[in-house]
Length: 187
Image 1 (cartoon, one colour):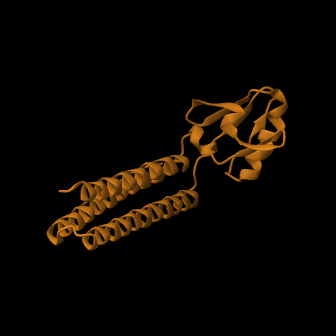
Image 2 (cartoon, helix red, strand yellow; image 1 turned 90 degrees about the vertical axis):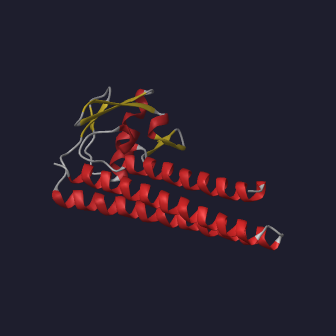
Image 3 (tube, helix red, strand yellow; image 1 turned 120 degrees about the vertical axis):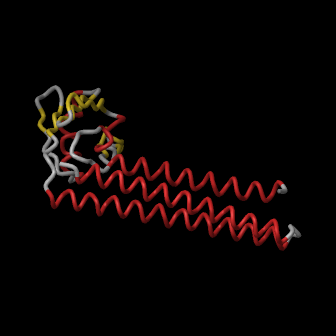
């Protein structure tokens, strides 16, 4: 296999791997009944005129599976953090005691669990589309290589390898969804 062909295949595999890594990160944000600091990753706080991620203005701990403790580095940030959590509409009711903010993670209702599964499904579909787009781009690169004189049998092998990588990554995505669905639906 010549270097250009190898490069196209390796690049496609790397991009597909990155898409799955991104999916895993997004799925971590979808809560499954137990507290997790990533649940607050989408929260942005007005920190002296700049919108900052919550993790950059406070320490977030999980002392037990049902509680999140947010300890700001600056006590003046308690109220803005509390407002930002409420504004993020995550279904939490933050409690400010003047030192830290406590969030008791409510148990999930059946309806909320189904909504979370739907949200996970959206992330899964977005990742599958991304992987298919990577496959399309890699196949277009293969066609360019063929026009530039790469033997046809090498291109056919490259396209088959690209399809194999695509199938393998789509299978991984489906397994991630099955695991997350089980995690969310388990009471």
